[in-house]
Image 1 (tube, rainbow, N blue to C red):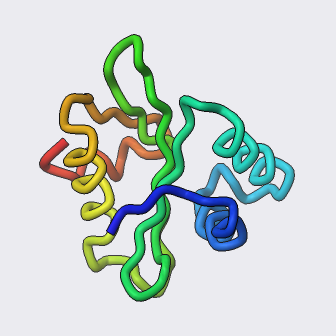
Image 2 (tube, helix red, strand yellow; image 1 turned 120 degrees about the vertical axis):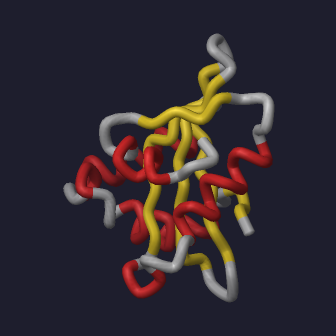
Length: 116
Protein backbone atom coordinates (compact mmCIF):
# COMPACT_ATOMS: atom_id res chain seq x y z
CA UNK A 1 0.00 0.00 0.00
CA UNK A 2 1.32 3.43 -0.96
CA UNK A 3 1.24 5.89 1.96
CA UNK A 4 2.33 9.51 2.25
CA UNK A 5 5.58 10.26 4.02
CA UNK A 6 5.40 11.58 7.57
CA UNK A 7 8.28 12.96 9.64
CA UNK A 8 8.03 9.93 11.96
CA UNK A 9 9.24 7.77 9.03
CA UNK A 10 12.31 9.96 8.38
CA UNK A 11 14.99 7.38 9.28
CA UNK A 12 13.31 4.64 7.23
CA UNK A 13 12.86 7.01 4.29
CA UNK A 14 16.49 8.16 4.45
CA UNK A 15 17.65 4.54 4.55
CA UNK A 16 15.61 3.64 1.47
CA UNK A 17 16.59 6.83 -0.34
CA UNK A 18 20.28 6.11 0.33
CA UNK A 19 20.02 3.07 -2.00
CA UNK A 20 19.66 5.48 -4.94
CA UNK A 21 23.09 5.95 -6.56
CA UNK A 22 22.58 9.74 -6.67
CA UNK A 23 21.92 9.87 -2.90
CA UNK A 24 25.01 8.10 -1.51
CA UNK A 25 26.53 11.29 -0.07
CA UNK A 26 25.07 12.12 3.36
CA UNK A 27 24.86 15.88 2.71
CA UNK A 28 23.07 15.28 -0.61
CA UNK A 29 20.71 12.82 1.10
CA UNK A 30 19.89 15.31 3.87
CA UNK A 31 19.30 18.05 1.29
CA UNK A 32 16.94 15.79 -0.69
CA UNK A 33 14.96 14.91 2.46
CA UNK A 34 14.66 18.62 3.28
CA UNK A 35 13.27 19.24 -0.24
CA UNK A 36 10.60 16.60 0.29
CA UNK A 37 9.69 18.06 3.68
CA UNK A 38 9.58 21.73 2.66
CA UNK A 39 8.71 21.95 -1.06
CA UNK A 40 5.01 21.62 -1.83
CA UNK A 41 5.64 20.18 -5.31
CA UNK A 42 7.94 17.44 -3.96
CA UNK A 43 5.99 14.46 -2.61
CA UNK A 44 7.36 11.37 -0.96
CA UNK A 45 5.47 8.09 -0.68
CA UNK A 46 6.35 4.90 1.15
CA UNK A 47 5.32 1.34 0.26
CA UNK A 48 4.05 -0.56 3.28
CA UNK A 49 3.31 -4.25 3.51
CA UNK A 50 4.06 -5.59 7.01
CA UNK A 51 6.92 -3.10 7.11
CA UNK A 52 7.89 -0.13 4.99
CA UNK A 53 9.96 -1.64 2.18
CA UNK A 54 9.85 0.91 -0.65
CA UNK A 55 10.01 4.60 -1.42
CA UNK A 56 8.76 6.69 -4.32
CA UNK A 57 9.56 10.39 -4.65
CA UNK A 58 7.83 12.60 -7.20
CA UNK A 59 7.87 16.17 -8.42
CA UNK A 60 4.38 17.47 -9.21
CA UNK A 61 4.42 19.60 -12.37
CA UNK A 62 1.03 21.31 -12.16
CA UNK A 63 1.76 23.39 -15.28
CA UNK A 64 2.07 20.24 -17.45
CA UNK A 65 -0.28 18.04 -15.39
CA UNK A 66 2.46 15.46 -14.87
CA UNK A 67 4.31 13.71 -12.07
CA UNK A 68 8.04 13.19 -12.53
CA UNK A 69 9.40 10.21 -10.61
CA UNK A 70 12.61 11.49 -9.03
CA UNK A 71 13.40 8.57 -6.73
CA UNK A 72 12.32 4.94 -6.55
CA UNK A 73 13.89 2.50 -4.14
CA UNK A 74 13.09 -0.91 -2.68
CA UNK A 75 14.77 -2.56 0.29
CA UNK A 76 17.37 -4.94 -1.21
CA UNK A 77 15.89 -7.98 0.56
CA UNK A 78 12.54 -7.31 -1.20
CA UNK A 79 13.83 -6.63 -4.72
CA UNK A 80 12.80 -8.57 -7.83
CA UNK A 81 9.32 -9.19 -6.42
CA UNK A 82 7.51 -6.48 -8.40
CA UNK A 83 7.38 -3.95 -5.53
CA UNK A 84 8.70 -1.09 -7.67
CA UNK A 85 6.11 -1.77 -10.37
CA UNK A 86 3.37 -1.98 -7.71
CA UNK A 87 4.43 1.43 -6.37
CA UNK A 88 4.32 3.03 -9.83
CA UNK A 89 0.96 1.39 -10.57
CA UNK A 90 -0.49 2.63 -7.26
CA UNK A 91 0.81 6.14 -8.01
CA UNK A 92 -0.78 5.99 -11.47
CA UNK A 93 -4.12 4.95 -9.91
CA UNK A 94 -3.86 7.68 -7.26
CA UNK A 95 -3.17 10.34 -9.91
CA UNK A 96 -5.04 8.92 -12.92
CA UNK A 97 -5.39 12.37 -14.51
CA UNK A 98 -1.63 12.99 -14.52
CA UNK A 99 1.04 11.73 -16.88
CA UNK A 100 3.84 9.81 -15.15
CA UNK A 101 7.34 10.73 -16.35
CA UNK A 102 10.86 9.86 -15.23
CA UNK A 103 14.19 11.62 -14.81
CA UNK A 104 17.62 10.31 -15.82
CA UNK A 105 17.91 8.34 -12.55
CA UNK A 106 14.55 6.55 -12.85
CA UNK A 107 14.00 6.32 -16.62
CA UNK A 108 15.51 2.84 -17.07
CA UNK A 109 13.18 1.38 -14.45
CA UNK A 110 10.06 3.29 -15.50
CA UNK A 111 10.50 2.09 -19.09
CA UNK A 112 10.06 -1.48 -17.78
CA UNK A 113 6.65 -0.57 -16.33
CA UNK A 114 4.28 -1.34 -19.19
CA UNK A 115 1.40 0.67 -17.74
CA UNK A 116 3.11 4.09 -17.73
